[in-house]
Length: 223
Image 1 (tube, rainbow, N blue to C red):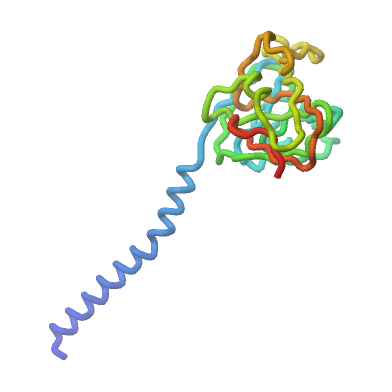
Image 2 (image 1 turned 60 degrees about the horizontal axis):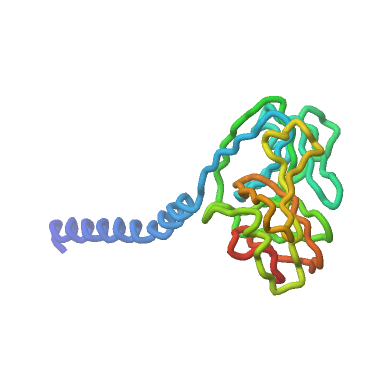
């Protein structure tokens, strides 16, 4: 083989290897792009006093993470038949715990504050529905949703929604005040269901476990 032929073969081999490296890298680059494309950013604004909060993104946050993210936050509670899961942001004696997407939390702020979250949209959540009030959030990213629309849902299971309650921003200083939409009284004024907010949804005939699609298309339904 001549020296010229040797250089030509080496050049062709180099080009071939470069092409193969590019082809092999395509799935990785596509996967990275898809992951970035599926993420979204939301801004949550909280007022001074008590706020209802639910997280529509899959963030793997703990109560202490949320406290660090929102310096004005002092208290976090969740609800499991009774108020529980207390975490004091300014205290060290409480056990930290993970925050579950679309589960409701009530948090107290000493001053208004907005914060930004970036993550992937959590498509649904599985709730252990109990008879009476359940504290949950809903996905409102696809369309506008009102309390009366939730009440109007039909289910394949015996589960039935009785009422939906919220704490309006103007009642942030009053722990005991909640505004309720009674599903059996269609003349009662409805209210908008908002992203990252949490609501007391009172049910009867719960079947456990219930899969809840957090979008308005399919609400609590049997697995």
